[in-house]
Length: 432
Image 1 (tube, helix red, strand yellow):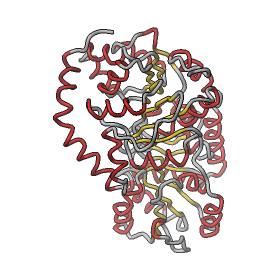
Image 2: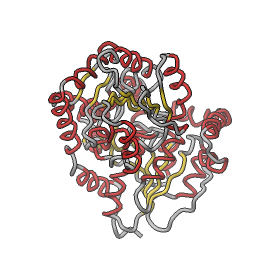
Image 3: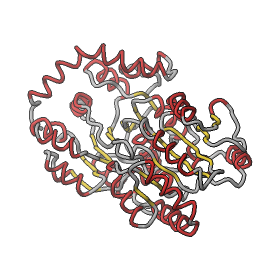
Image 4: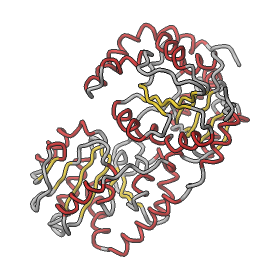
């Protein structure tokens, strides 16, 4: 392993200086979401749970999508390693809440430790992981280097690099070689990402191509009673869902909806913002548009005159996909790379999206080629796409079939990933 380059040494020297400000920002965000003070301190490396006995495998992810993407992999590893326990760390309150509802047996969650010497040391001293797996693009230099120094085998899984990130690493080749050289295995989502990893300095003999883990994420739970009650309120009205929307998208959705009302006066629009805490902002947009609305967090019921239903709750995504025949999926009209298309596909829900789809480009391309995706750029094209499926049931049914086909694909793809990880990280069922 090469010695630490100058840029890494500078980063290590600077992080203790900026740690108080970084901690203030992190704690403020968690406090705003009602996270207890003791759990906020997990970000400083102060654990709130004991370390389990025996083998502990640590997964670190950034936010909701990345965290949920590893649940099926953890379940498969749990079957292979019946004596192992698992730790998931993530940075956001939303991810914590969802993970704790859906994580497999023998699994626990903590907030991610900040990448500074003191917090990282406390975290590793307490948890003493037997292996660490970082998800997608979670490259935290001090955490990686300190874990490797303690002989913790490391893997980067579901690796994804943007063009901007690749260009940045190529400007810092010594730092890239140093950090990526710590990994025993780097499993890329695509062949292109695998080639990028090698190009920026990852050891070629440790880079492999796997499956996009988001294709294996279990579907969100569905409360049958909730769905039945909502169906009774909706009746025979047509429904359009705008799912996981971000700021800058709801106003486009509402403009498209207004254009649709002339030909589809009974159309019900469900808006489920990606971050429910934005409910007040979205409600203000709905009111400004002059629409009759009901809001889930206030217990307001859908009535005959309700035009827009604001589904601003957490953990009910499965209900919205069960109710909707198709959806607009957010993070795609704004430059956020698009959300996981496999989640709606598991419910047979085809998609309308904007052009920003880099987070899962291959899956989106597959869905588009099969007729299950329409790409739009503004309110006018969005309204046209929605009307196309509302007015042509046969076309919509074919699109729904395409969505289901995407969900079936890669169903057995985890087995070779598990084999590879167990071999590279020395994860054996007989681990002491």
